[in-house]
Each structure stands twice: as C-alpha cells, then as structure tokens.
Amino acid sequence: MYDLGSRLRDMRNKRGFTQKALAERINKSVSAISGYESNVQTPPTDVLISISQILHVPISYYVDVSCEDGYSAQGFSKE
Image 1 (spheres, rainbow, N blue to C red):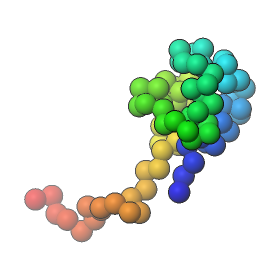
Image 2: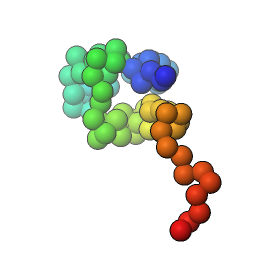
Image 3: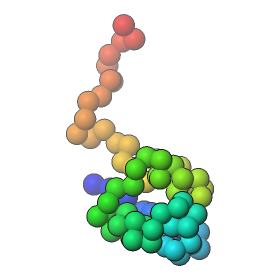
Image 4: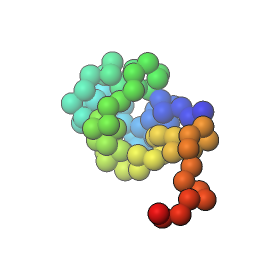
C-alpha cells in the first residue's frame, strides 16, 4: 500500500518548503498540509495538481497507479 502523506512530506522537504510556505502557495492552511502529510485528509484533486506543479513532481508519484486489486484490460481486444 502506498503512503501519499509520507511521499508528500519527503518531496516537500527535498524541495526546501516548510508546511507554511507550501500552504501559502496553494492557499490552504498549515493544518490542511499537516493533515495531508499524516494521511488524516486526502487532498482534493485540484489541490494535488497544485502541489505537484509547485514541487515539480508528477501526480503519479503521489497516487497508487497500480491495478493489483482492480480490473485489467489485458487480454481484451479493441472491440
């Protein structure tokens, strides 16, 4: 299982942003950033896009794009 919060915190730190600085850039509170990083809250898609743009990281870094428990289209034809 992936951990969006720790990935966000790690990248924020690598890019030299404090929680306050990131919060100001995306017009959110420091408590919102803290909630995202501790996995108490999940950032809405528009917020995640903003964070990704500011930190210069693709959204796929933050979200689990694997299909382990889902359905796969492998083996199906285009029809």
